[in-house]
Image (cartoon, rainbow, N blue to C red; front, side, top):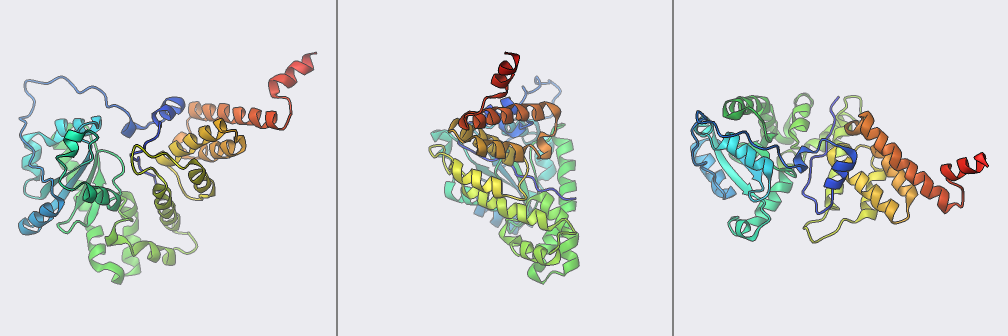
Length: 344
């Protein structure tokens, strides 16, 4: 079974409070653990040959017959990005290991004005983050010289040698995706079906090179028996959800619109679904709408991400608060009040 997982997003929301409340494994939203002390015998570090102009990087890759390693990062705020750069990218072993195969592309999404001034084309960076569905940091996308993606990853432990091995595996696994993109809509049904799992795992369904695949899958898996249809529909719902998210830190979330979409959704799941669901649930409860809050909490409770007993207990406590608010609104005694009455 292929399960579509919503990826973390840059949100102008107090979502870290949810992480504390529900004890979710939201590594993308947390500060990374402290780096290990410097070892005198550590591998030699070098300057990383980042290319910050995307179009220039593509031209270079075409000329040199290389692929692109695209680093979506937050240079002045993202702790995990700093860890990845310090533990992997800045080591001579890594730079020399990728030199023959990749042009290293640096797409920055800083928060400070000084760092923002160094971004070559902020508008293009934003467009590329959407096109490549790079909504959390760091996101590392592997693509051919034309920018067609075939794999994605992020922070990985164990240093440069392990990361080079990881990239080699991703490149091998991604080869069929490039073949599918090359074939385009003329690809055979068997080729589409054989490649779809890798497409979903690489999270590239939203890229223009694969825009035709979703419609083909809905034809090939009309009854959902292959398990592909639900992934395509989840991706479609995710696109609608992300369209409702704040575009800048100064904007606020349209809680009513997001609540409606989440409740109507049949396929959404994963980090963002859980976080937005409980953010909206708590907001709705504070706004005096316990029915909506309860419905959201119960729906999100079914996500595998929150299956652990502790989190389920927290959700049950929240649902109980909703029930108490509903009883109060209906003029009914709460469980505590009812128990007190029985004792009398």
